[in-house]
Image (cartoon, rainbow, N blue to C red):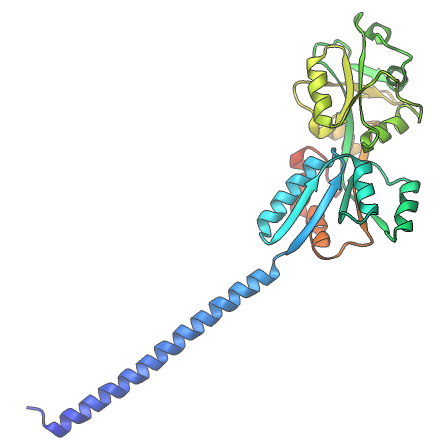
Length: 300
């Protein structure tokens, strides 16, 4: 039988032990909660935040959409809006201070630089990928190759029948982009040597519309970014003066294809904040893998 005095001692000891144990448990809980909270805060602090707008070239559009989608997946607090409309539209938006990044499939013009400087904008160029302009015809068209002279004659109006360039007796439907397109300007400079497009050319506001029209019209011819090629059109081999070269990834990357060109981003000065983080991602190994996945060619 336990005496009253002994019972009181045992009880007192038990209470003390419970208090000490509770203190240790409480300390452990607080430490765990603090650590978890700190870790979450640190993780959130390291992600990109804010919002930017990217606008311009329809050629660069699918690439920017893919890059932005993956970037935002990795950085949930970042918001990137990507809009097409043509290289000229994108550069004009940058000049007016409406966007952080302009997409362009051509270099910025001197007149655009002058307008930018007048608005206090300093355009800085970033080459993000390489592309090849594919000249495409309907798969039922037997013509598989053209020289630059033949192509120029078709687009300036000197030739209007496929029979004049080795094809069947069929009227040529010439399709072009609108004048705000960087591809329009590049093709005019490289193929037409700055001559005007024929007056009856069918103007399309977007590359996808050219693909659709050529795929439906046996006599049609158009030009598109390489990434838009599919089985509804046939890309012609071109001779720019050094023999016929097919539009293949190998020929474009080697610089042998006569209509290979760089694709650009333009920013106001060196990019900062979210714009810099996004462009750095595009130029990273992961970003350049997306360039290849979309159908363009990496710069490094």
